[in-house]
Image (cartoon, rainbow, N blue to C red):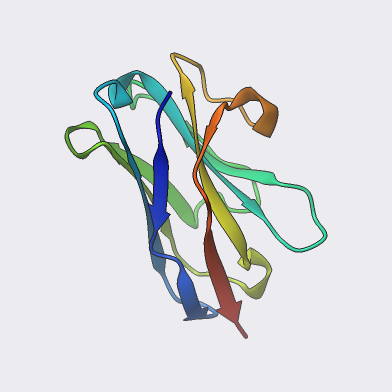
Length: 124
């Protein structure tokens, strides 16, 4: 089990960038596949990016592909989400999630460990 803490959320104008960070506790971070999900009011939690535990594979839905990029620094126990060309519809609470020794999965129920979330608001 890992404890996850997100940071970097805030208010940004449409078209601007924002980078989220998620730092994990413990010594086994390099064995966890990491993912970012988001949830807007009244909507289900949706997958936005994932990177496997080796860092060799990443996955994005079409809605953010070519705009978002996930990366990890195992030496810092941190995963990042670089978000570019933000749109008002990207407004949501963004959550970091972890699944040990797993492929990149896109369903929230596949991830056991979650952060508390960080708000991202994109103004038009």
